[in-house]
Amino acid sequence: MDTWIPHRNRNRSTKAANNKRKSRRDREERADRKATLGVPDTSIHWHRVKYSPHNLYPKIRWVNDHPTRSPSARELKSAMEEVSSYHFLTSGLNIVRDPLNKKSIIAIIEFTPFSQLTPSEKDDLNFVSTFLHQTKPFISPVRSSSRVWGGLMWALGWRKSYDEHQMAGRYIKKIDLSQIFNFNSHYQQSPRLGHIIGTLFKNLAKLPFQSNQDIMKKYNIPSFADLSYGQLPEDSTCSPHITFTTNGFFNPPHKDKDDISEYAFVLFLPTRSSDGSLVDSSEYDITSGPFIFPDHKFGINFDQQHGIVKMIWQANKYTHCTMPHSSSQNFTRLGLSVQINASLTAACDRYNKGFYTDVKDYFATHFYYLFDCLKRFSIDATTFGLFIFFTFGLFF
Image (cartoon, rainbow, N blue to C red):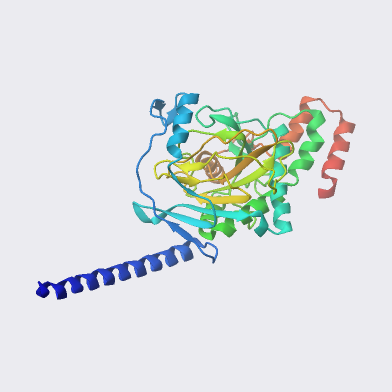
């Protein structure tokens, strides 16, 4: 029996050496990925997940990647019970890797408690949340059963247009004369919104941000902060539009296959329903409503949200969705995301290549909607002149 002891010791030594080499390779790979992504130089929680496709709503029929109906209350309850077994992230800076491709990152997720935010940062976040809330009178909610199962989704910024001769336009509904001054003064604040969101995106991971900005520059795509087409890109330019959700929003599991950008950025904020202002106190009573990746069985847990949550993820590659959160009379969770849509990119590319040659072709800019309102209400020349002077006088 003693003759086997050296062999057992040798096996143990070999196993220990292999584990040490594997651990060293993992550290080197993580350091390389961290440097490549340009994430903050701080402690990172690296997560391993398994790929195991999970159909949360097996009785719902899908056609062309779209569900044919919303889930029943019973189906929704069953899905919530299944999701409760997922691995949920709750704090810190997290990176989740694709188990089938070590070079691919599913998501970068960062939790920041309010106690770690400066007064200036809180002021910026409050500006974002209130700006979006104050935009609602000028835009319409997204009406799509394949994108919205509950709550509300809104969009602002630029979109591909299907109106005759209109190459691209902005997410604006027709405004009436009583709104025109508020409409204009509100959107004149858009550059600050663009700077804040772009900076948050870039500070979380520089490579994904730069990838989006490179697409914007290559195809001369206007930023959501631009009120007219052809403005020079800012350092914070990253997306032509924002989509944001409120009122207990939830949606079907999906991939954003219409996006040309590899990465999307999302920011989650606790807000007041009445005015959209940021809530940084314990009175915020929203729970549940996780953001999940069903095929990898992990997600973001907001139950202990006493701060903000940011995420960069490959929205057109990995299945994801939001589950419904608890009801509240006073509060709602705001989620806003930026990404680049393929159809608008194609329209801008065609314009840059001289595809649109008719003199009637145009971009529906912010000022187009202003003048359209004046024209529809048959404003006389004197009133029109006064409007131009008080609205744009500083620019001439």
